[in-house]
Length: 132
Image (cartoon, rainbow, N blue to C red):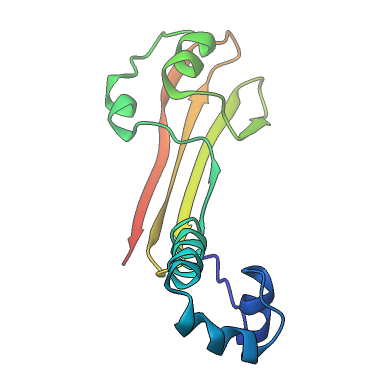
């Protein structure tokens, strides 16, 4: 989760005011108040984060044994992790997390097994979690 904390003085400086006295003068300038409110709303709404490869979870069910590694990657997107396993097989892993300033978000992950010949064998694991 990304948390944005800003105190009143910092917020005033951010919108171009230097003191609380200048802020009190905003009551005399309605357009400045509107501009300040718009800046504040934009900052609040843009406070979100996303990391990883946002893959489509439904694609996992469409992966068929024997597909090439390149075909799997073409459908899922670039993996975030690659582990060479004993015997020459490979584990590919996708991770994606999101969060916003309201505390909601989610996370999902998937891992697949590719054999030593570069062919898809199976989905090893999947997780998906929503935060509200």
